[in-house]
Length: 253
Image (cartoon, rainbow, N blue to C red):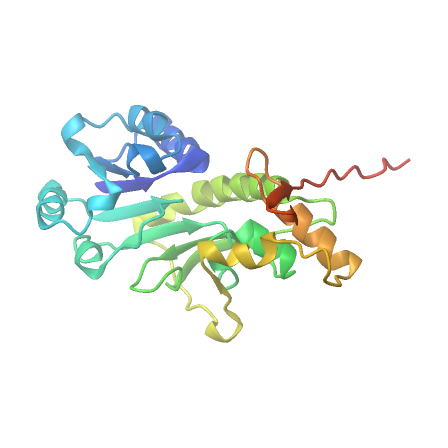
């Protein structure tokens, strides 16, 4: 099957390496521009595609880029942690559809930072492979699994759990995508939650004169603990003081 791979970050790298080991490389890749990319070169190298089959994710509205992708004849596109919204003119290029691996138990936590909001809002965490439609993480679900969140998880440790679960889910579902022997189910819109990148701004500033419950404050601090990112802070005059939370569960007998 001829497919296009849209990718960013470590999970996308692990998946393309797994696909390459199976001799199921894509015919082209779409990556973030260098200033926004993570693992860009590793993804390109693992894909094994030629330079003329590497596309810039910021240019997917360019008619010339769309025409070049269309000429490749890909039947399907696969998106893993790709951070650009895909428009109808792109989605229409693929006869077998477009699919996205999202690190959330959809319809909970559509959009950005699912690992943060599963801790702060105490919503279920997980990973989902879904069809891409014109919304953001709103398409029909092909497969998903829940990931437990412990009281000692931070934003980083939960993110790593979601990476591992996402990799396993993809390995499980991929053969069905290739064969076409899969079913989809619509999302339950009534329980959906949505978040944008800027939403973390409302929790990152810890107001020293506001009352928080112990749980609320700990949840914010641990959710935003993800070195080397700065996360939550309080103000000392006109300076920000950033905080990280160290959680050390007592070992059982």
